[in-house]
Image (cartoon, rainbow, N blue to C red; front, side):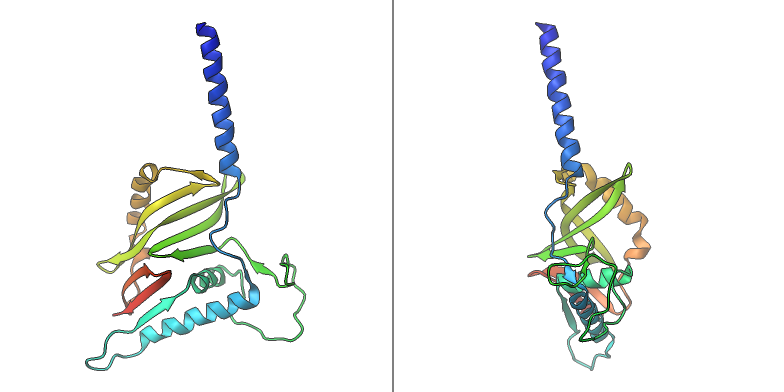
Length: 205
């Protein structure tokens, strides 16, 4: 009887492990749609144009400027910084050939740089490698700032399609944020950031 019970427990443990491995390697639902290169370039330019508003000198008695950025603009800016899209958009009635994979519209799509804002939640998704395998990581939470530095309080963490309890990763994440504190310092012209109503809001200092 005890032998049968041990075999059953072993089988269940093995099955659970296989399911977990499958979920880890499975690609989750994307948090945002892929952008055609032309649209991404336009959104990246819009991102830069809006940031320039924070450089304008405030007049006496004038309220600080407030910039509202969409998730498409932020995603495009990240992709551009990584070199995935050109620094400037090139207008042409005849698109030049591209080695990238084309989407349904014939335009190459920017992939792997996904950011989405929903309500006051920021959600990001990126591709990394674990043991030589491509694995998608999804992280969501409350993005804000305090004392001139970016803060992040996670509310969701997924590896592949496997949900991981936030309590298991929060301490490690906060430790990593502390180690990277210098990189999280707000620009000199930014007083605060937050996500609200599906937008990233930056307030001028």
